[in-house]
Image 1 (cartoon, rainbow, N blue to C red):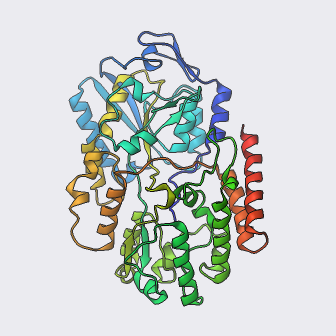
Image 2 (image 1 turned 90 degrees about the vertical axis):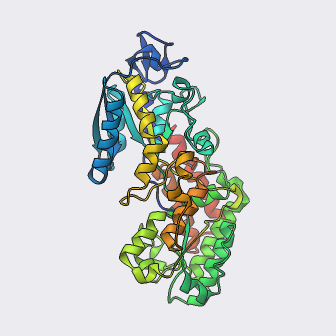
Image 3 (image 1 turned 90 degrees about the horizontal axis):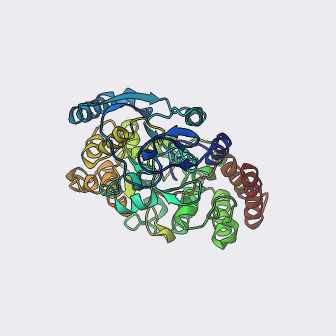
Length: 456
């Protein structure tokens, strides 16, 4: 079961709102008279050519809900940057990351007041890139990619207004994906924990073993498919949307029907609590009570279990989530971007690179209060991740994820909540036996296309 993304912004809605305000870039290198997203900017911020200029001036740096827990760490980073660049000043603000984050970010962009350096999720970054509000980092600093895991950097791309792929973001911190399970419950069900399944359907077969052995005394996993769509499909390399993101294509792959049929079968056979079909609850509580055999795939979940249910933690195993047809895992990183509308872009770019360099990423990921992983190669090679001692579940998860991230990609299919809910609703009907798997998939694609067409 995948953990939900950190935020749920709607890229399609953002694009519509931003386009209405006027988008795109114009201008060359140096001087004034250029525009970015309809805002007047220095020509050096847009077009071709490396960004030049003195690292002097005052910039604003915005994070998302980090100040309360990590104030001292980021204050330290800012002080070190200002010490290295005496003419630069960084003002740190922290957005609460609530449900109005997207709306406020759009408003800031349209008003030409985006923070100079801003922490974004994938959906919002995608929309702001398309509208021309973010600096093309790959052009403005040709060496900017060097610290990052190559696969992560390659996949951390968005399309600009012309459809060209650009690097408008730096991958920052990310989560990971692991298979967590109750070793006692799986042993009772006859599931071999020494060899993790290599495919999603192989994992489903293990769920079925749990259902047959438990007979309702405990369960394999939670039922609501919202946790698995499109995560499972991405891992199976099922194409959910067309290349331009304007239409749904998942029904074209016969494995989608097979996946829905499996979900319906597992629900009918009792692999999942009946009352969890429409529940938004993750498995945390039931797993900690020993009532669900498989826990969340988020590594931070392991720490939650350790803190809240030591007895279950002692019986928790950590393994490889199936790579399936994709052949590697994917991450959902948070990003650091630089506003193309910045009045002090050289300062903003320098700070963005300083914040995300290997030294600062490693230092933050070692903080005992955070369970995140870095996106730089040097950080993942640090002994903190590689020389893990002990065989406790959290240590095992940390080492496993660090290895995975060396080949991970940042690509995950972005579905708006409306489209995702439309698809999920049809799958739920199939799981309840009210539709065949084939009909549910057909109807899900039709409803998704209606919503995508409305979004433009």
